[in-house]
Amino acid sequence: MQEVVDETIALYQWLAWVADDLYGPDARGAARRWTLRRLAREGAQTVPALAKGRAVRRQTLQPIVDALAAERLVTLEPNAAHARSPLVTITGRGLAMVDRFDRVDRAVLGAVSRGIGARELAVTATTLRALRTAFELTARWRPAALAAV
Image (tube, rainbow, N blue to C red; front, top):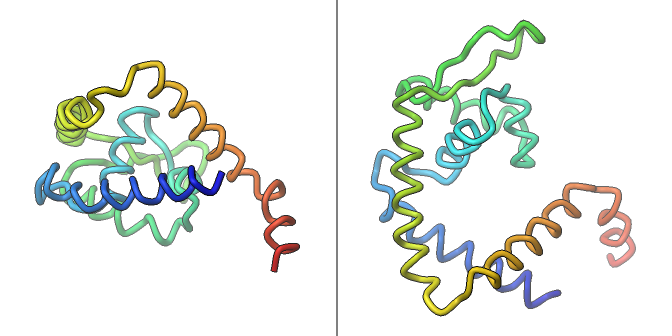
């Protein structure tokens, strides 16, 4: 298990290092890219819902959403379910940016994954998803962490 964690961290570091070069200056920041991708794939959400999905506080994500809105990549729409929490909706301009991210990803990931079979990649994705889901359940890991201290 520790090897999986170590390799995941190492891969994250490589992805973070090359990301700005891959996507260009208008896509700076992993949080910006993540927010746009979530909205493109999952639809309009409130800032608190987006923050929960990233395991950060709303106050951490709000400035990112505000910047995306200022650049007309997202809009803030009235929310009938909660008057003080507007829905963040991706614009056509934001969707075009996500499409560009996806094209770059397909090209780069195709180049670096040569020799790794589709089945191996699918198993890896399933395993990482299961681990992420387990970490989302605080009750599952917090007692073990506290006991280890």
